Length: 340
Image 1 (spheres, rainbow, N blue to C red):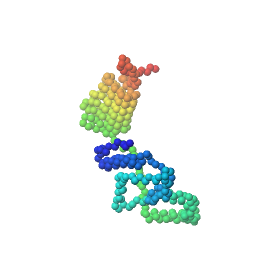
Image 2: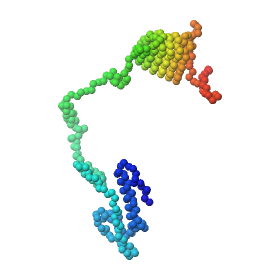
Image 3: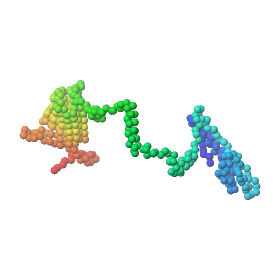
Image 4: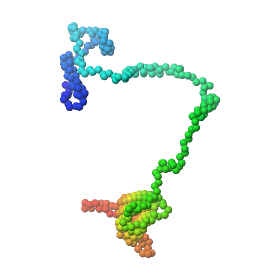
């Protein structure tokens, strides 16, 4: 059964179309050939010659050395079938001009030569030159001294060698580690910029006004004092930072600043803490209305002022654990209180 091959396929490459058409014509011609010459199937001659001998005779264009015996029926054997028709027997393209013909591969001969060399055993090393004891440097100190003298003379002929300059510790540290930035305190329009201070010897003091805001970034172990009434304060990536505020109109926003501390002597509406691990908030009598919002924070304490002159301040930790349950189809959360 021939495959249902469609020769009318739209293809941009005509080589593919011709290949499919030739393959389809080959199958049709092979089917007609078999129906014509082998209607009952292939015949087998038990008295034929060896297949290898027939293959060699066919390569040499010689007739078979042994003539098959006639079948036992007594009649003459049928004539051999005609050769198969040829399809698209296109010779290979000629090599490009100037290119040398590729040498014929003879892997069998190469492997035979390798195995023949291995089979020689100890005879393989017969052609090697034997080194006499007088020529061995490890047994003749005079030869070693001569070799060292030759090497010294060769080095002198090349000229003096340049040794690499040693790299100082300051250069290596600056090349490998990040460069430490200098602290900066400047007023840009209505915004104070305080950046990159690391353990300054004295607190940083700023005179502020109601229209100004303060941005603190990249500081470490720094104390900042704001004198006057400012608009807002924003602190980002500043560890061990302490800030003293008189009065703010808006809020203090602290992000990713561990071990943070703030003291308010006047009034402050809002304090926002985001990802702060360890914070102390000291409120005054005029800032008891301050609201504190925390997100992903821990170890946050609010210190309330003493109620009387002889009383002490009260330290109140903010809750970190919440209990959530479902009530009437809604989520209800409450603070977990630890008694003990």
